[in-house]
Amino acid sequence: MRATGFTKILCNPPYHTDFSVAKHFIEKGFNRLAIGGAMWMVTKAFEGYYVLGRAFPQLVSVIVAIISVLFMVHAVLALRKFPADYRQYRIFLGHKNLLRHPDTGLWWLQVVTGFLLFFLAARMTAWAMARFGSRWGFTELADVASMPLLTATLTVLTLLAQPAINGYARRVEHEADVFAVELTRDNDAGARAFLKLGSQNRSDPEPPTWVTMLHYTHPPLMNRIRFVLDYRPWVEGKPNRYYHGPPAAP
Image (cartoon, rainbow, N blue to C red; front, side, top):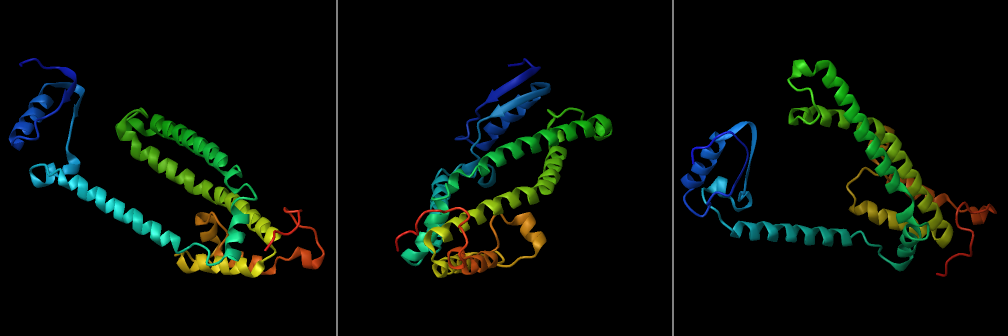
């Protein structure tokens, strides 16, 4: 075929043959593209074709096996964080379920803030391109060359917004801790449950304030332990903040 000037080409090279045949397909197809045209190809990247010179379908099975093993190891390590006894389990149960922990509205905050961050990043990128785009070589957000600028802008905005988002998440988690302690009135079990979590967790149990603001969506471990040990409004004759029913049965 001698025709040229194609704007789009779809190609499925015969990878089962010698690589020179597939190479011929790719080169000839590229030469027949119009300027700005696109060429889509079926590839076998996961079978090691471009690295080893020919496809090895077994590689896909090996990669799947490795991922499965990693998943199982991760699950076993996660099980080590489970409460050691029923009293600790009651603390976590109160924290997770009885405050409607999965339905605190935090995910709505993430959706809204995520949309706003993307919107602001797009607007700021568009402004920067209007002012400096001719110097940079791209003037439209649809141009793939604008992706580094958009990514950098979004990263900066996310970094600026992170302290507020994390602060809200820590407040929600603290309210869940309060509810769990008020429900169970088992301060000792709560402290031991957090200690068990800390023994398996790699995070700093008492980080600097700026680290907490930027990275922690939960209160630092030592803050949680001090709180569950000291918080006893029923002993001091004060009302509970969230749970107003009778204590949970032991």
